[in-house]
Amino acid sequence: MVELKFYKVSGLNFVNNVQNGTQLKLKNQVKYNVNYFGEEKRCVGKLDFTVNDEEMNPFEIRVQMEAVFTYSDGDEQPDIHTESFDQLFPFLRQVIHETTAMSGMPGLLIPLMKLDRSNVNVNKAPENENSPLN
Image (cartoon, rainbow, N blue to C red):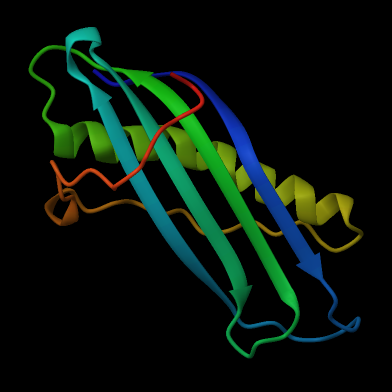
């Protein structure tokens, strides 16, 4: 069983220089990595999520989050990866919604996302990766 212990927003960048009434065609980009600390049954998920306009209008939200999770004996890394993402994603949605709402525009609620377990690559640690949560 994967359990979220805590998370933090480590980066937030918001640019909204579009004219009022401009129709935006938004697209999302997501990057999610998990670093494991096996003996402790603990891992750190790093989420980098960007929303921007397909037409290159000056609108972008980029949120970087980190979260600590624990997991149980027998949990497989692809399952830990997807379950940890599922637990962190609602907080990302909330950050984006509240940031846009506080800026004077209607709050943006991004669609729900699920990771496909079959697309998870394990044992491919990014080079020079470290976390301030350790």
